[in-house]
Image (cartoon, rainbow, N blue to C red; front, side):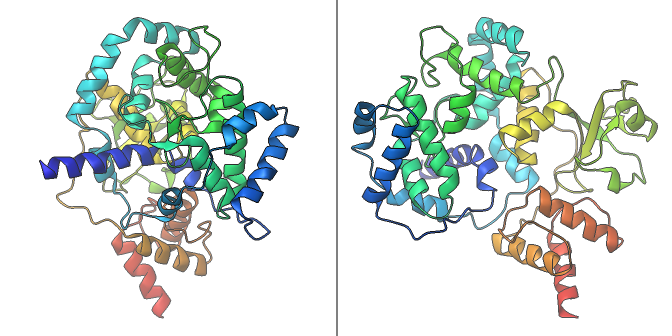
Length: 410
């Protein structure tokens, strides 16, 4: 029983962390002036909100009980000791229960999801996949008061500008009647079944049931329409999938991998890229990219424009693959065909920071030594690998780190 509870808690934390990855990768914005007392700072928030047209009576109700939350700062400062490998991430994001539950939700809400798909062009399985990954189909929408959480982070110096914008957006959607001032969300203010941060809620949430409110906790029409609207306005291509697992030919030029290279399917076909059953790709002129989230020894994916749209929701390549794969599993597809390695050795955050520092010292821009493997770090790794005549897959592992450490000792 204890093991079950421990596993459930870890999975819940993993779900909540997914939606935060996109903006937590951004470098911290440090305020130019020293942090002022919270009560004095909150008066400045009132003044700004008032200037934006939010009424005094509402602000009195909304802000009177807002206090800094110590636990929010603790969670903001906490980083997991180890990074997640591809297979580890996939195992935690997708399991039999999440697939079963997702299929149940697709059947239960079939008519509404199909109606949403007809309007916005986003297939039901993808809406359900985002829902499953973000909150486990509504089971975990957060326990922190949204206003208190974003106010705490906006007052803090680390990302004050970003969270000040989130606080103003939260006040805006609450003053319009969309969201109650006492609503709870993630420690960073992500809200509802699809964990929209306040600015996303303000700009993309939809009143799908016509009751005059945009309710992403209790209204399925609002929830589904909002998620689909966000994806559609971010560039979702109607009727297209996200991508597919593919077989690369022997001797494939790894410098052609990565989102920086886009080619028509006909050209990938000509280069020998095949479906996993050995059949050739179509001769379609739609463009795609080859991504290798576990390096050249792991699975390869040919991804399309919708994969890039998923990345606007969350900039993690692992997240985007997980969304696509879960969407496929919900409609009967099987597991990936590539073999999972017997053992994966994750890099610690300290290892990643060390790798980034050494790469930077060698003249490769990683965007800073923050311990997070983002797009700039992958590009820097790939550039170093090309220069060192290594397989240029952009993948960080212990072997690469040891080679870099060897260079530093010379």
